[in-house]
Length: 255
Image 1: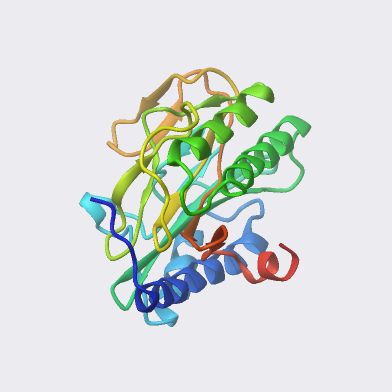
Image 2: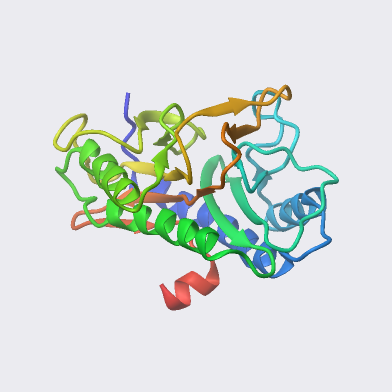
């Protein structure tokens, strides 16, 4: 069942989303060679808790990290560790914060030092896929129309879609109905309604769409070891479009 949020609930989700944005403010300048993913996760947790929020992912179904950090060919759900970032890496930070009982969820892929033009393009197109989708988000539109927009832009640029993992509804719980694939035909599935809160999250792969799950039971990697990027925001459907709830201060100023 898709839960329509009240204005009060949306206000609470805005506050949770702001916390997620603050985490990106803290992490982006720290993405440098030599820092470990565990150190970065600890920074994220300190930021989240400093606002009275909780890291949503910590202990979620047994996940050990406070956020997910996925490097290079890791697509999603990377567990923070003592692994140190290297020049040329790309790193995805998937961040969840729960404040006053409501969740914010977003992801950014950042670069470490000088990366290849191919990596830069992958990150750029992944972000573009998100904005292509939400440009169509409005009361009365079919959800699959957004999914279709993501797939078309990704494939036009030569990238594959991770099809077995999806975006999702969000609110009091991290994962709520509906499931939001990053592919599909236009004009199908549930219709968007004012007050729906959704986590839209394109996950693109440089090579094929085949993947493996590591023995840790969480980390999802590209099977061909080529790069992957991930971009996500929590949005709320409004009367005339949508509002993004999880932007960083840099994005709020320049987005």
